[in-house]
Amino acid sequence: MPTSSRRVAFQILARADFRRFLFARLLATLAAQMQTVAVGWQIYAITRDPLDLGLIGLSQFLPFIVLILPAGQVADHYDRRRILTACYVVEALCALLLLWFTVQSVAVAWPVFAAMTLLGCARAFSMPSGQAILPNLVPPEDFTRAVALNSSVFQIATVVGPAMGGVLYLAGPRIVYASVLVLALISTVLMLRVRGGARSTTHREPATLQTLLSGLRFVRSKPIVLGAISLDLFAVLFGGATALLPIFASDILRVGPGGLGLLRTAPGVGASLCAMALAFLPITRHVGSWMFGGVAMFGVATLVFGLSTSFMLSLVALVVLGAADMVSVYVRHLLVQLETPDRIRGRVSAVSAVFIGASNELGEFESGVTAKWWGTVRAVLVGGIATLVVTGLWARFFPSLWRMDELPKPVREEGTGDGVTK
Image (cartoon, rainbow, N blue to C red; front, top):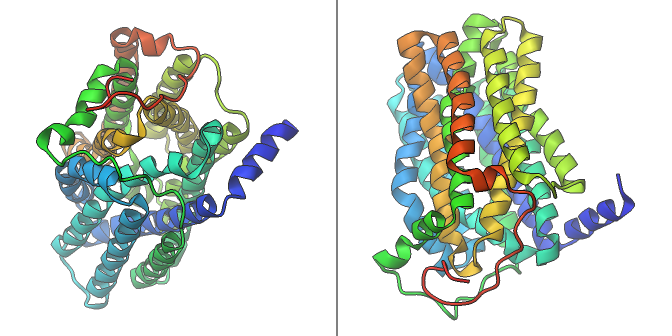
């Protein structure tokens, strides 16, 4: 590992506000991952219905998709730091509700779906603000490594969180939810201590339907950005199998909640290792090939996981799946942020978040529905095949993305309006 690369990474981490932001995101993501394991196992234990696992994702997706574009507008008009702080408070409230439902021995699923709906509202506002604030915390020349470090923190949480959730669940779901509550509150305090990074609000655009939709117009005007985020949407929408992990852990691999925690952890292991490598050795050439290769490998790993009846092989497949997904996530995030002026970064990040949310939460619902129709294993296999088909189609539909060699330079703030002109 080059000494200069290590030095640059440590210099970025030495920035107090960036460090507080990273730790706040680490703890909040850790809490969310722990909660996901507990909710999935608890719901499946109550109903034994795979469709309910899909409804967990749908209950988060519906408020998310309704609120995400206004949330992007809010991120461009108000202090992104305070928006994130408010979102962490709502996440803490969600954990408190789940804890109360558990203490009261609620034996139906709908109160849990209601709490997850509240969490979906918080995520709608946190995603565009969390993505858009990053360029405000580091110099432009450090941005690519800051993205990789930010992704590394997220993936570390996805590694540790599910394992912690699975282990703590052995002592009961109330222990998990109480821990989630504490972590969310600490994240809130850390974000309150972020002092720098506030964007200027001296040139606010009026809150109109035109400005609300400016992020959509911008993405449509950029085929490379549109191709990158839509590729991720359809690949994960069809190929995501994480919603069905409670069924694999319980009925196919028979490894219990502890094993479910490890299965949930495995994609994060691969993604975190890949993200840490990218933090020190960022992708600088053949960017398009790296992205398409990552999505194709994601599909192959999904197929291997669906066919596996070995716990160890399933873990390896999920590790590879996570690493492959990290490559496409890294490239997509850089393209969105580097191509977007700061004045509409929140709105464009909101559009990107629509695609991400659709691929994750709606993908979970799709997995639950197809598992109900065709069976769990067949649903995963069909999803893996669909991911490979999408990869081939997108290489044809977006040739400029497929042939992209180097990342674009950061845009310079020129012009007015929706930010399409630079």
